[in-house]
Length: 217
Image 1 (cartoon, helix red, strand yellow):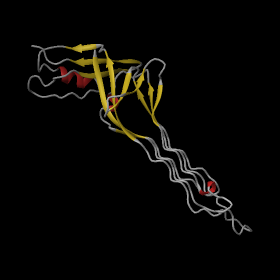
Image 2 (cartoon, one colour):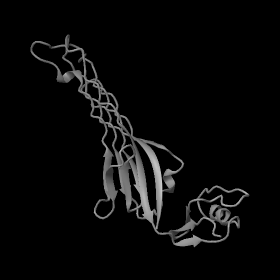
Image 3 (cartoon, one colour):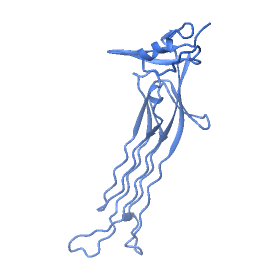
Image 4 (cartoon, helix red, strand yellow):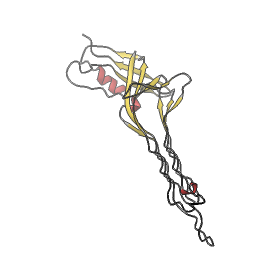
């Protein structure tokens, strides 16, 4: 049993600001406020992908951000919502808060999809603030800020193939040639101190996992 791990930073989308504007039309001398609400920021969502079996997609990219909501517009137009970001992970992935080690989500069984960070709410436009005593409000509500969170992904898996042999016989080189792994390779013994995992993609069927085991004496 091996543990595949990755540490990444997530950012939800900022809510769009409310808009300040007033109705201006022909024959309407003093139209009321018509500034629209800002759009909602995008969520950060994790989803199980049955075609994945490692966390390799998260080893070379650290930050993942959802889209920001857009500002509202005149004529009571609502700002466009920010786009959600959906991150695919293998079944069995556990998501931890990096700073505390607390489990946020266990992506297995019935839990196929989890919202980890919700986007900020859009601000209200000035059309919402007209009152009998304040008929020309010149202010609008700002959108809620984005949220950022560092998480640790962990997946316990069983390798389909293990590379076993003496030190410096080319196990890591072989792994780097047949898979997407990038193990440390050098011309001295015991370069590999912990197991390295790689996925071999096979056209037309599911790939398999190879483990490069540290050299044996």
